[in-house]
Image 1 (spheres, one colour):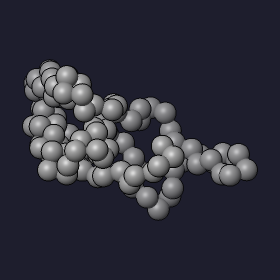
Image 2 (tube, one colour; image 1 turned 30 degrees about the vertical axis):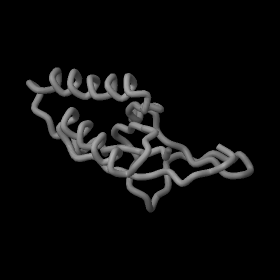
Image 3 (cartoon, helix red, strand yellow; image 1 turned 90 degrees about the vertical axis):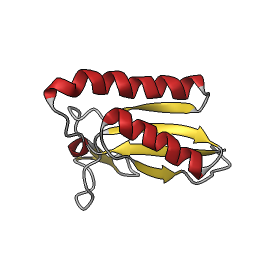
Length: 113
């Protein structure tokens, strides 16, 4: 079984105010289905009110993330699934609930994890 990251940036969620209640309900329902299926690892949204910092090997802390990288924000879900095809199917379910496309990435296996 592999772990898959299903995510979206904040700007992808273009939802009319009148639909937010349904989006929350529908997206949470998919997460509950993933939990019931035993494939849910963790998920949530990046807390955008807490600014990122870069921490160096010597413990030095600098404000901000990598200046050359796009900001990391939005929502993430990690599922453990037997195939990429199943990951695509779950990503589609999450996309439907969230009303926005989802990016799908596979984690590389690390025997120490």
